[in-house]
Image 1 (spheres, rainbow, N blue to C red):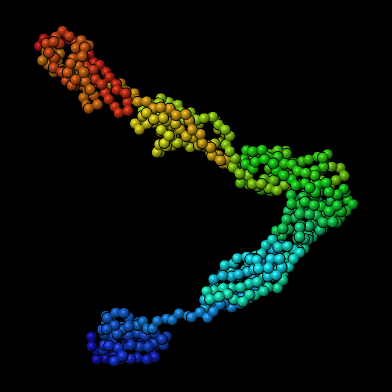
Image 2 (spheres, rainbow, N blue to C red):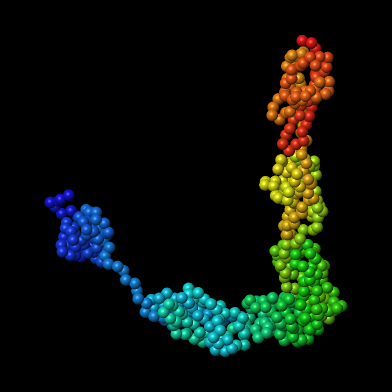
Length: 510
């Protein structure tokens, strides 16, 4: 629509306007504005795509034009050299931290972290992904120091290597009231700072197993009892000074649980280096808590123990020695096997139409059951109850039941009954059968029961009348003075035929 006065476009940030671009762009009757954000908007007649939006349609309001094509950043080269950050010393491990280097225009593809120098020079220390900025190196020898080489790679190459300073692991300290020292072969308790009368040796310190007791560890105070974890394998002869006899004859204890770690299987505890004449007191632990009543050297795990850690505790006492409690390592209890049971049985009449009942046999208390009936060895769809009604498809097949017993803490067990061959069913007796009509020569007699399931035979004096096999019969002179009867047979698929005979009176002359 032509306008005699200007119409506002709504553009407020134009820095240049070109009207009717003429020879530069084919077409007339359009305008374009260059905006302060370097974008372009055009409006007016859209002939020959002059509005720059990919359309020939005209627009009375400004539309955004697609100006230019974004150019890809050209990669410069390999990444910059990574920069090491902090390193945390732990027991037999180091936590290394670094700063991700600039990738110089090409995305990082790998971070390489290897040992530098020493026996492991050039070996991979860990395999971080490109987004990682830290890595934990484990299983380090506390007697050695370690340096590491760090590099980054992208599609254009690998950076120079950044070599870390040499670091060692944490080898001594004070934790939870204990002085300790870590050496190449063991974590050693070197002193008790508090509560040194009834000593309980921790199994681990700062994540490392306590494996030995150092010299003069418990010379302060009067040690009455000591509890040793299974990880302790040596005790210095002068660990307890002159208080009482040393525990050297217990240092090879190595408490061991014998037996299958399954519910229902007996476990026993044994060990070496025990004082032969010492009195022994036993306890069993479930996830660290004492099991009520479990005070013998033999213990049978129950379903309460399934999936939990079981440990044995032995306390040794003898005059002249420090009372010592020795704890084994824990073992996780797996599912046991349900006890053997008698074979399931199927009771009932093994004919079509009859209902069978499954008897589970003898199982342990608390067992839950599921049922699956088999016809000819094949599971019957939806037959999952303790009873099953025989259908036509079972005729001539062997029927059995499969019973699965389930109980928490035990592996499910399945037993199958003996199979039984299925015979045809027995129909109910025919009822309501009678002869309708007058017993006179020439009169028609009819069965009170009719239908495709019935077949008929008329009898004269108990003998078959040839050809008289329909539901009706007309008396003849041959029947005079004789009694007539009707034999009806009913057929049903899968069942034996059933027959009934009804007797009429003597036929008279018309």
